[in-house]
Structures are given as structure tokens and as C-alpha cells.
Image 1 (cartoon, one colour):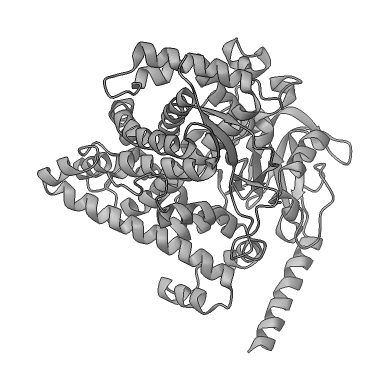
Image 2: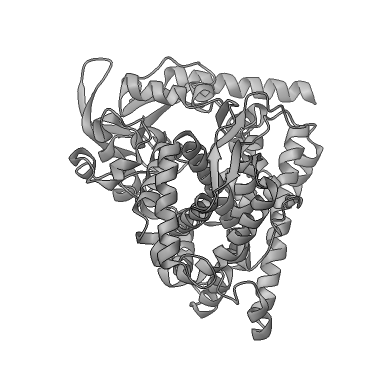
Length: 553
């Protein structure tokens, strides 16, 4: 059996390589780095150890370059502002999420917002938008603070009167999961006690990205999965996964199972509460959570606009995953940077303490308006950290039909032509570089790669404001743009500010002296040198900081 399969695979591989060698490639004249015949530049693009290759591409080739994909097929690496506007806003239907991105998300989350295209995606987004309106976000802020006060109490117990080393990543993951659990779904994952065991869902989310970006599984995902994902029924596919002799694949399967089973439990509880007014009032947040709002909107919708139970269930894992993982990493990064900038940390502490003195409500929290507009330095720190360190540094796209990509700056081809636009054939993969767009020195100036929150406390350079960067947030691409923009970015901003304000008011953060390494696992995740490996061979994730209580003035 193995020998015929090997022959079949070898024949198919030879066909792919021959087709690549003899097919006319209009993108071959776009300058770019040398690439391997089999893996192109994928190994460097997806390198877990950082974004050095992405920095190299930007500095060497500028805002558009040719990079090699699987079997060295030409891809475009893009952060030209006019091209980005065309891809993300003007011609969104031509430039959609890549097949690999959609297939992977469909396999993990089901038919959710991040795993649908076209009419299905538009229908889901239309139904979900009301849940993230300012009216509903205002109602969620008190729920945030119920969780944040538990976090503060536990860290006070851990720190005591002196100084303690605390894994900030673990605590930010736990608090982010509990906030999205309570405010998103009326569900509690974690008591947030100082010695409570982390919920299996939190563990699964933190380990998912390292697992899916494991070297072996990345190869399977890029070279095999696109060609077999439609084979057989889901039951058959599950049987194949179960029978496949790979501990790492089974580890990934178990992570996905944990997320799915928890989502089913949450969904069934929410549906049951919707049929009983008393049950709804007993839920955390009294029925003001995202899922309760979504279920009410769905019941009011016309039959053609209504989402199926399958689609509703799929949103749960998607929102919990996005609400926990990216926000936890952004909070961790911000505290890490503030620990390295003690003067800025002290200035922020004064601003936060003044806000609490002037605007704190009876429950000891800050309201929606205070978080949104009355702490300019906190806002600047969030903007600058998200600009410089976007949790997801790039996004894959795919051209669905032959198209033209206009450029703000011409590209000189390898044969000497100057192009103001590029013809992109159907099927071309495009790497959108959020990382390089947010750090482009031609827009942000020579200090573009420096963390300077003060840049947001004065008018931005004309080069930034006139560039028409298509992002929905703060002239940057961190939350993307167009119909694929992050639907929950305002929720995320509120959460970040509420958590940071409470922590900075009460605690002082300092580096431990251990070298922190930010890995690139699809999202940026921290570890330290010498942290060791997990049972499946992945580097352990953590970010220890020295934490001490702020003494009253």
C-alpha cells in the first residue's frame, strides 16, 4: 500500500514542479529574495523565532516584493498603502482570505465569521454587529470590573508586602478568558483565585498556535491539507486523524476538542436561558452578554437573515479564542514594555490615579466614557504598543479572479520596467505585512521602530495622515480594514484599558533580568531563554515580571 502511494505522490510532485518550471509567471519580474524550489520562502516567512526575515524584506525590497510559496509559486509580499486600500477596501471580493486560512479555521471553529466568505460572511457580520454597539459595550464595563477586582485581590495576595516574580502571561490569559466568558457569554471559566487551576479551555487556547505552527503540522497544512480537506465525511476525516501515528497531531486534536466541547456547553446554556426569563436574569450580566444579545437579534431576524445553530455555535469558539489570545498577548506586551520604561509607567500611574480619584464609580471602577477619552496617556500607550507590536503580524490573502493591483510607489522590475500597477493572476497568494505597514519609516519617520507613545499626544506626521492607511484603528493595520476588519476591536480596547488602569494603579512592574523572546506562532507569544519544552516539544510560554504593591502617597 505504501509503495503505490509513494509513487503517486512522487508523480504528483514531479507534475507540480514541471508545471512551475514551464508555466509563464508574470510575477517573476518583481524583485524579491532567492527562494527554494520546494518550500520557496515559507520557512523564513513562518519562522517561529521572530520577524527578522520580514524586516529584511521591507528594508531590502520595499513595500512590494515577490516571495516564493509552496513549490516556489510566486506570491506577493505587500504593505504599499494604495495596494492595501485596494485589497482590503476597494476590491475586497477579488482579494479574499487564503484557502489555507479559511480551511484551517473551518476545521477548528466551524462555520464562523473567520471561516466564511462572500454572502455567508456578510450575513453573519450583519447579525453580529449590534452585539458590539456602544450601547451594549457600556453595559459590559461593570462586568469587566467584577473580574478585574478578583484579579487585583489575587495578585495582592501573591505579592505580599515585598516583591514577587509573577508569570504575567498566565494571569493575562486567565483574566482575558474570564472577561470574554462573563461579558461575552454569561459564563465563568475561572475563580481567579491565586492558586486556582487554569481552565482547560485557557490551556487549549494558549497552546493552539504553537501546535498548529509546529514544523511537521505546518508542512502537512501547506503541502497536503489543501488537497485532501474535502475527502470523505467529517466522521471519516476524524477517523483518519485518530489513526494517524502522530503525537503532535493528536495533541492538536485534543486542544480543538476541548474548545469545541466547552463551546457546546456554553451554547446550550445560553439557549436554555433565552426560553426562561428568570433563568436569563440569573445569568452573569443579567442577559446583557454578547451571546444573549445575539440570540435575541437572531430571533427577530427574517428567515433568510437568521443564523443556524451551527453558525451560532461556531461564533462562540471564535470570539472566546480572539477575545482571550490576542488581548492577553497585547496586555502582556504592554506590561512588558512598561516594565522597561519606568518613567512612562510612573507618568501613567499618576494619570490613572487621578482618573480613579475624579471619576471612579461606587463599585470602584471607571465607566465607558472615562476609559474611552479621559486618560490620553493610557490611550497613547495602547495605540503605540499595538502599532509597534501587532499580535498578528501578517495576514494571508488570495486572488479570486485576475486583477490589477495599483501602487502608490512604482516598482522597478528585474528587467528594468517601472510599474505603477501589477497584474495579479487568479490564485496568487498575497502576504499582507501588518508588521511592516505599522513600522514604515517613509510614513512614521526614522523613529518608526521605536516605542514612543508621545507621538500620539501631538498631531501625527502629514506623511501618516495623507497616506490613507486603510486600517479601522489609529492609522494602523493592527485591526485590519474593510469587511474583514476585527468586529470586536472596541471591546478589546475597552478591556485593555480597564485591566491596565487597575493594574498600574495598584502594582509596579519591573524586568526580572531574564531574556524575553517573542515567538512568532501566527500570533506573537512570549517565552524566556531556558524556559524548557512542553511534552510535545514546543517552547513553554511565559513572561515573568517583578511585581510589587504601589504604596499610598
